[in-house]
Image (cartoon, rainbow over all chains, first blue to last red; front, top):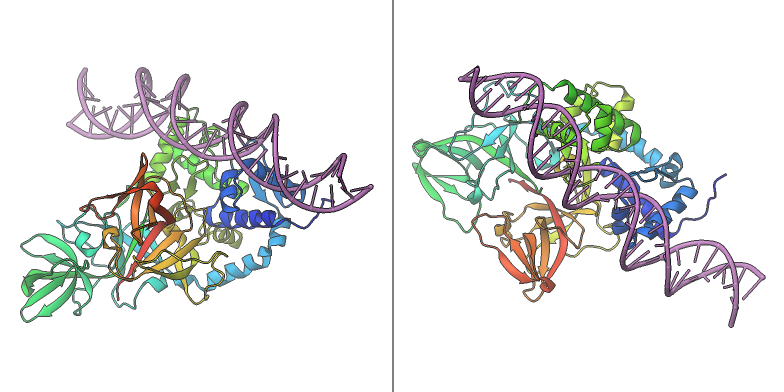
Length: 234
Length: 234
DNA sequence: ATTATAAGCGAACAAGTGTTCCATGTCAAG
DNA sequence: CTTGACATGGAACACTTGTTCGCTTATAAT
């Protein structure tokens, strides 16, 4: 029978961190990552405490292997996650609609109009999908798709190179909505807030320090409505 | 659109091995373990082929991190595990939650430092939670939390009033990472890319048309690392 | 046949990560 | 108060693991 003593606060923190790290990163943490998370400045103290957790049967270690650490069944019981895990899975399966998968339909660059298929994107390779939580998106009628921004030309829209823009496939928009428009004659796609003023259109940049542009209405082709912008930092 | 070519036999073997190894070991394999399993005697050939799989969107890698490798959704689908038994589904869901709930810990404004609870955000109202898909986030060690931007002061970070910033609670950062820093003396929070240069810090705006600022290192307090920016359009 | 590109390979190097050493501090038992 | 067990911490070391270099071979395109 393995020894079973109360865990020290540090050991408790280590165990919880390891569990969370594995769940969120798909691999165990390093000694140094554990030390940082548990406020232990010395790798030897982390090693010592891991030795204790191993002695208590809560973890298994592999010698001289990077990330050679795993939680045992006993650890999961101690952490109370067996039941939580099942409930979590049921919750997630039931709530599957909370994640929406969208086709990453291509790039958006200033010098080209947005090209999308006319049949609901079924022509796209289904493997290029983006997942977003439903809460990120407004109610919408048109099909949704995602575009990745290519280049610095969308800076006035507060959109960076590499950002992902979630679009609704519409060709009309209400005043105040942010849209992707193709400017006929200028041969340019731009993302701006759209306002109709008599027979021209005011296109208002998202950056409040920048001035709007005014374009004859017939030169503005709405190509989609912007619902969200997603930016991952490398 | 990501390149999508038929996988070479070696790439197929690598992918299958990686999947099996993760399932059976609870962590990704090393370059050398992959080489041994796929009969590839050279780590640079393994590295080359992993680069190809990454290019095809089948894996994600992390530079200079041991076992810094993960399979993407696309890879799981290509491997045909989406139609596997419930066990497989639970395995995937338990192993990599697709939705992560984060506390919306408050606002970020230029004139105040970021204030976060010291006890893992348990003090926050559970109704103020943000959900993001796991794919949006880099692997991380610190706790995560979300802040809503208040005001126009983050424009140089390409972040708008009302945007949500996903933060990792760290107080140190590597060069090139985007961080929230409190500038002592200036009484200002700013979001910028951080680079150390001798005894001062270069803070580089996200907007490529803007110039960096240089600050003595002791006046820079890192308050968190920016992992993602989410923007909902009204 | 030639050329360009893709893929392969061994070796060295760089960086990450686990282990060990040694000294010090804390605490409980006697 | 002393002693022994336990825990801590910094530093160095040993080893693991990822990346790069320079070259060769294979394959596809012309």
